[in-house]
Length: 465
Image (cartoon, rainbow, N blue to C red; front, side, top):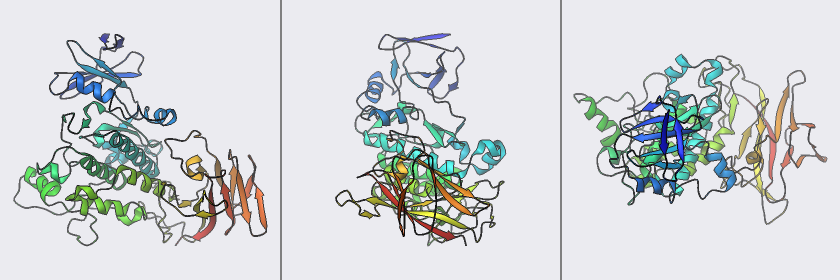
């Protein structure tokens, strides 16, 4: 057993066997398995003063309200204690998730190492990206840049879509805290690859976009079939990621398309492709053009609401995004068995706070403007109320659920725990009380929530092509 004393005088006891080791530190697990202890091999650039600033003044969790803090402190392994004396180290929450994001971004690794039960669905990949963007947003709001944002520093659960961001003791406050590293190869922006700039929030934004792209598409956005002849591997990487980067799905330049199978980026729906183009075309040499983390959050939340289940049980993705042309073909497995099927979608509007009973489409708060309905799908408070996001919701229990009765070919909505749910039809309206059902009919409206936060949805049935 190892014992370490923190600067506040408390003592933490750890298992003798380390659980991780890197170039700069060794990591141990506390006996109660709630905390990791990271001991630096040498102090080097890491000083107690730097760690105190990350834990204190620049702590991204500190300014949050209790609800949001509770959500993120289980997903951000933020340093919470300092070990000083002969050895310098930190303590941080232990996040127990099964794999690193690095593995999940490899389609071949996913197929070889995860079973159908453990790999989850591609929708979980979207959920992982949503939480990742939220975590980066919090760091940036606190004036921090990560400086080494990569899948190596993110743990994930491919089944639930949960994440844990680790190794946060190397964060950078520009002009105050010197970066320990300048990024991971292939995730650095061109200005760092070329030695023209150091870590920055804009550099994080490039790395975040690469991580999102790889998690959803299973290949790097700048690595395609283009070859630079007569160069060493190092020189070629400098061209690919630094001096001559070319987006693999550039709409006008097809020289660098991915090798083998790849999913066309337009299959992601209307919200994500424009952000990828901004980052990997204009943003390559204009860092200010790169999408912010909160822009990715909004686009990912909208895309999550468009996911439809694939009917092929052996499909590697098991779901896909329903684009505006309502395709029946799954881009992962090619299944078209749902062609001709009628599915309900909800066109979502929000309340006009100044004019009771008036609703309008407004995506400014990041809410979904279209929700594709699947059997068994549930909606939560952030789906049915404006101004609520997954990380600040007081109530995380599902509010309504959709059901499909194949024998009668009827879709229904079940009120699980929605305080106010009204079905509006051509002859009037009826309240759907908790525990009761109502049929979904084309052209009807659903009113969720309460005054000033309520959303309404028009029900439309569409045929898959």
